[in-house]
Image 1: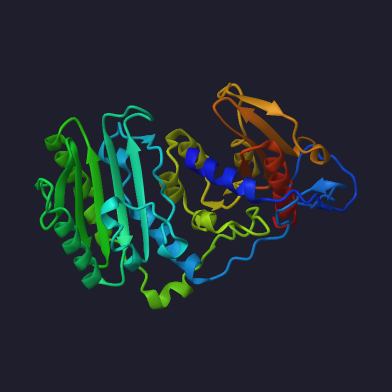
Image 2 (image 1 turned 90 degrees about the vertical axis):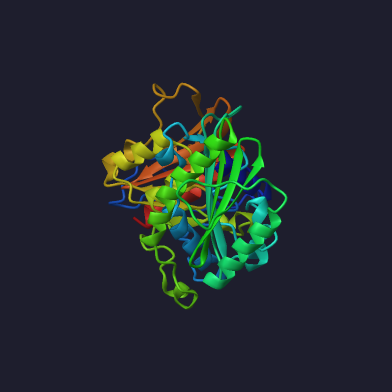
Length: 378
């Protein structure tokens, strides 16, 4: 979750504390149910955040982000190739990369044709968070058509001409090299997509073998995937479950976080975050949709399942309760945590919401706005 928290911290710095409040009748609910909307307390501070459902449009960037998330769902998890590869890789981002948003989170070899890329995603995991000995990154990059993808592959072959060539077991037509001792970078084009596998292991032979096992899983998965034709992108629903519109948003979101905003399935979410245990809890709670904006909203099977997602201090002693939102009583819980950013969370009906932030004031105001949205839009 580290990268997500960094993003939220950046957002927090951009919000102006203008001190606006929502008028209402004073109350301090001990719990919230979607069956009836409680009155909004007097003085509830939601400065900088929407208190109505966020508009979800079909703009050029948003539809490509949706397509990027569809692609993300097809990326083979490194842990599926090697169960030991489950740790986050610092600095690697899984949100869709769009050239129009001036994102450079793409492999070095693809920087030159970036202007021709429509959208790209990649998932990276290592054997441990720091000082890793093995690492695997799998990326999918969408271009206009197969001819452009083939040109990109040819370009990779040309750019790699000074590096030792590598044969990836079981893969033909790959542009693959030893980019450093024990590191293999391999590219394969599949229709309008370019697949990039970056494998690091104890030596180059082991890295090539790891890359081969990755392609053996990734290429069949792509054969079952149909990229959305460009002309049909605006007909693909941006928020089919209605969960994104219920997720708290800033009144004006910084452009550099737009690519993170989206409605996700659990497999998409699993590829964005390196948290196998947390994902298992979501699945056990029947979560079928996740809204990712300033915070996260998880739609569980029912209210009891949503409440089961609330923090358990017995399982996580690193978190410490903090002063929450006074006007909302214990409907909103806020916490600090050792080695991480503070956060606030709440449950309304079948929705569990979680708002991490660089400081508690930001999290409290966002959580207050989230409470208003959910209690009025069950």
